[in-house]
Image (cartoon, rainbow, N blue to C red; front, side, top):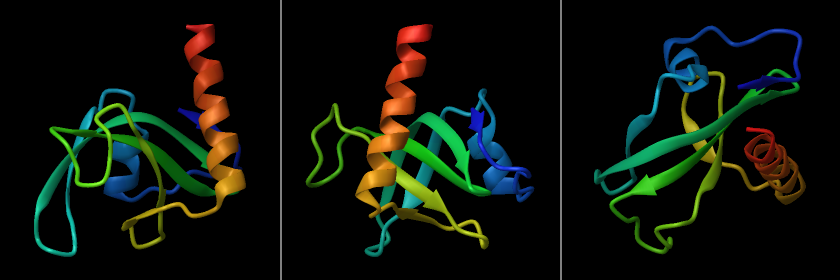
Length: 101
């Protein structure tokens, strides 16, 4: 986990998403369908937590090797980040960590 903010949010969901030991997360979509994602990377930008999640077992409209960037809101709900510049920046940070490890 990489932190670029001054403080980390302290909610239970947020702490689990930032935990390097936490791997899988189950989310429920608007239709009530459970979707399982693997936590790939998490970071904090300007006191906001972002997490890259990859689907396990397939998600409609996504290839099995794709991942998405989610923003964790103050009420600890996850939403897909639609800030394409930020998405690119965070994915580049993630790729850099892969090269370093």
